[in-house]
Amino acid sequence: MLTRLPRLGVSLPRLLCNPPARFVSQSKPSGSAGTASVTELHPPEEKSGHGEVSPYVKNPDYHGFSRDPVVDEWNMRVGFFFGISVALVIGGAFIHYLPDHGMREWARREAERVVLQREQEGAPLLSEYYFDPEKIVLPSSGEQ
Image (cartoon, rainbow, N blue to C red; front, top):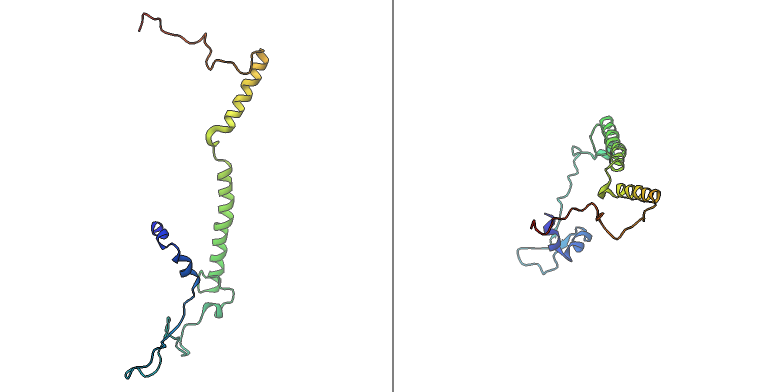
């Protein structure tokens, strides 16, 4: 679905900003048509007294969870508690206690430890060899 989104290109902002509108025919009426016609996007609401009343009229504090005001308020409180409080607290603790990505902190501590050790031994901090040449065992020329 998201791969099709770039295909809309320039037309997407136009689709989002234009509100629904009524269309009135401006053409001359033919013999059978009579008068100009108006097409509605939504059918007109019935004016009878038995229609459905908006939940906002019944309960001005309606949150959209349930039609019953008590259940609606409790569902809203539970939803916000778990959605905000628990997600922020547990999510923040999870992110805080994630392991060291890329072992950057360990590398820093190890470098500081090696520098202190070499300073105590009186050795240079950096040497020209990556490995200690005395510890490298090379095969003799006859073993090849």
